[in-house]
Length: 392
Image 1 (cartoon, rainbow, N blue to C red):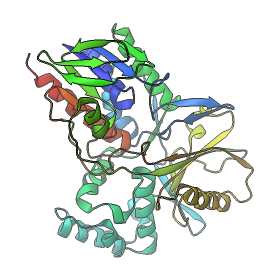
Image 2 (image 1 turned 90 degrees about the vertical axis):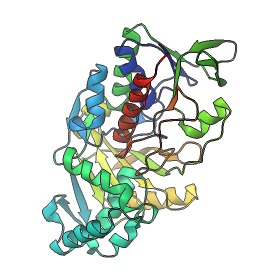
Image 3 (image 1 turned 120 degrees about the vertical axis):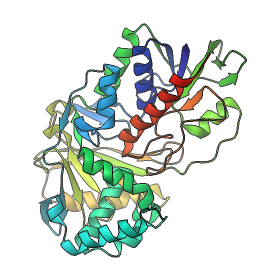
Image 4 (image 1 turned 30 degrees about the vertical axis):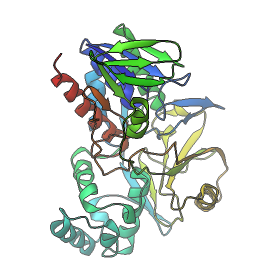
C-alpha cells in the first residue's frame, strides 16, 4: 500500500514513522523548507525557540505520545517533571497536589461532576462554586494547557482530560526539545527507505478509481491512501469537498532569557494572580542544552481578538512577575487566525474521517480527548486503525 502524508507536523511525521515501521511505502510532502510545523525549534542566540508548542509533553514518559514514539521506534528521552507543577498565589508558591485545594471546593467539584458529567454545562458555572485559589487555578490550568477559558468549554469536554491527567500524571520535557522529537521521527521514516520531500507544496488531491492522485507544481503521483496534517478545512480545499468549520484556539507565547533562575523545578509554574499569563516553565532546568543560560517560556490564551492589546497585557504580567530579575524577551509569538494554537479547540473530538474513503486527517485539527500533543497522538492512533481496516 502506498501512502501520502500531506504536511510534516507532529501528526504527519508520527503517522509516517509508524506506517513506515509497519512496512508501508510512505511519502511525506512539506511545503516549507523545514519539517516539524509547530512542533520544532530554531536556535536563536543560543536558545532553542520553538515554532509553536512549548518544549513540554503533557503526560511525560507515561503519556500517549511517549507510547506511540516507542511504537514508531523513535529514540526520544523524556525527562519527567518533579514536581509536576506549582502555583504562585498571592506572592507564595505552593506545590499543586490534591491537599492544596480546600475540602469545600473538592466536594463542590465532585458534586458538580456527579450532576453534570453528561450535560453541556460551562466550566464557568463550576468556577463560581469554588474558593478563590481553586477558581484561579482552574482558569490558569485551562489557559496554560489548552489555551481556553472556563467560559469556552464544558465539563463533558474537559472531564476525559481530567481523568487522563489523574491516570497518566503531569508533564515532561523531551531532551533536545521539540526538534529532537521531530528529528527522531524523520530518522525512522528515512531509515525505512521512505521519503520526506521538503519544499513540496501539494496543489490538489483527487479521488481516482485506484485511490488518489497527489498533484504538485509539475508532477502528479498515485497513492492508495492519503493522510493530511493540515486540518479539515484545508484538506477539504485540496480535495474539493465541503467541511464544517472548526473553532480554533488562540494564544501567545513568550521566550525569555533570564540571568538568575526564576523557577527552581522542572514542572509548570501556574500564575494565579495575573491578567493574562497562565503559566511558565524553565526548560533549561530539565535540559541545559535548550539555552546557553536560564530559559523561561510563558504562555497565555487570547481573551480578545486584538493581538497587540493581548501582548501588552501579557508583557505587563511578565514585568510584574520578574520584577528584580535581569531578563530579556527573545521572542513573542502569537498564534491565531490561520496559524492558531490548535485548528480545533481541545476537548472536542473531531473525526479523523473525511467524506472520501482512504483520506484521513491527523494533527491538531483531529485530536483525541487529551491535552495538546497527547490528543494529537490519540488522533493518529485512530487514523492508523482506519488505514489498517482498508481493503484493496
